[in-house]
Length: 234
Image (cartoon, rainbow, N blue to C red):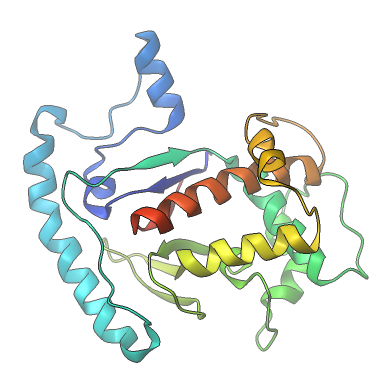
């Protein structure tokens, strides 16, 4: 199963009015591709129907979070809001998560290749155990959606469709990604950009982690600059 990362309004996301990079490339070639919106010609109406649900969900979430928020929980949910997407893939994302977990537990040996059940890895289990203060919590704690406001906690709650998901902060994720780079690779912005241009279908955990790091760093920067949520899609 593919793993994409989406940045943009949640109205557009839940309306299916966006394309991942594979769908976009297929459309550009004139090849058959899946259309996310059931009625693409009615895209505006579809978003108009979904927007009130998103706004009501956001208001309820802001009320529940209360003084944990450093600023109002607010972002552009109009059709004019920009959107971005990229595909780190599960292997890339999993490799990055493990890279972060092993950075916190240097006494453990990082596997050369990504284990099939990487989400049960010992280092990751230690980083996510109750009471452990992970330096990379908004990456390793199974977060599925990052909101464009600063807060330190991660928490589980219902998304717009009523699914239970773990949520975090775009601002905190971006800082933690920078901290991870400073603690391990110490790569320049040019190095990171180069990593993002090399899609790694196979390779070591570190090679795949570098590609996913470049993808998430770029999208987190866009999400923070545009004040938009960021979400995994799978």
